[in-house]
Amino acid sequence: MIPSDLKSELIDLIQTLVRTPSVNPPAETTACARLVAARLAEHGIGAEIVEGRKGAANVIARLAGRGRGRTLLLNGHLDVVQPGEGWTVDPFGGEIKDGRIYGRGACDMKAGLTALVVALAAFKRTAAHFNGELVFTAVADEETGSEFGTRYLLENNIIPKADCAIVAEPTNLKVELGNRGLRWIDLYVKGKTAHASRPYLGINAVAYAARITTAIQAMKFDKRDEAFEIPHPTAAVTMIKGGLQANVIPNECQLTIDRRMLPGETAPAIVAEISRTVEPILAEENGLGLEIKVRPNHWDPYIISPNEPIVQAAVDSLKEVIGKTFPLLGKAACTDASHLFNLGGIPTILLGPGDARMAHQVDEYAAMDDIAAAAEVFLSIFNKVLG
Image 1 (cartoon, rainbow, N blue to C red):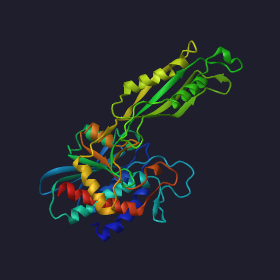
Image 2 (cartoon, rainbow, N blue to C red):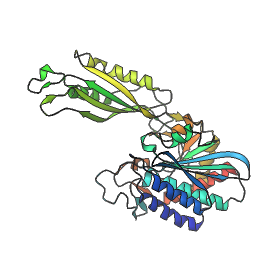
Image 3 (cartoon, rainbow, N blue to C red):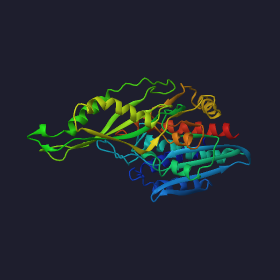
Image 4 (tube, one colour):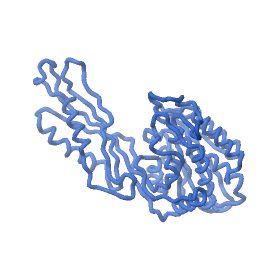
């Protein structure tokens, strides 16, 4: 059980984290990182701060047992997306009402980080003897590709080889066995300028980009994997930019595609698929061109077996703490678990408080009872994995 004084600290910690902005871009997480490191230090858990680049601060802490055993890696991200407009509460106020804490990052994912910190403190206090090691990481830059966060720690061998990992993303306290992958793809439609009074003398890149957008949105995918919450790939045009001025036929328009992937799909294959989709449109106009660029920041898809020991420990802990079991599926979105599995070779589950549908929403919130329950579940998992 989580000691009563740590339950009180949980409330203070989540409010303080939400009230400490860590918006990405620019992935400035120093203040939050120092806060987390200080809280760990108060419980006798030494932590260091490692910058992936200036301002992109990551926290790393280790809790070693007396004997040899498994290494369990804990991971959560400090950065949050821009708050945007339309909030009815202060996005950095950390207001608690009706059992919920509101604010940018409350759900995604300062709730999960809070539960991990409290569980880690409780484990240090209550575990008289354990084997192996807990490695805690609170990272920067998850929201834009993890170049200076989890990927940086893996690629520079700062994160040790672990036997298993938990990423405390919001899952509604369900165990998730992986996540879909992601590539962001930019399409540059190339046309020809002309005076808008004589549009037939030009090639309108914006008009053709609109048709390409419609074609992309209508794409159908044969590949399915029922192990995932959303069992098929998706493609969405999420940004469009074009036009020179009101009286000029535009010669270029940029589209950005968010392409979600299932295991087995590759970047070259999905680029070829997009090319085939838009080819009939391009063939209609001599001089119309298209350039396709895949952005370097990415997440690869993955799924692990439900028979992995970390999965069984999590399922058993959920039964003990909240008395429920749920279907074991993969997440629709992308997380740092992709990098832990694909770069680090670590069997990784996703498990945390909060409803993923609240992530990046106006008036984002997480239920306080769920955060406390998550801390209890994490503590139970620590005891099972390292006992």
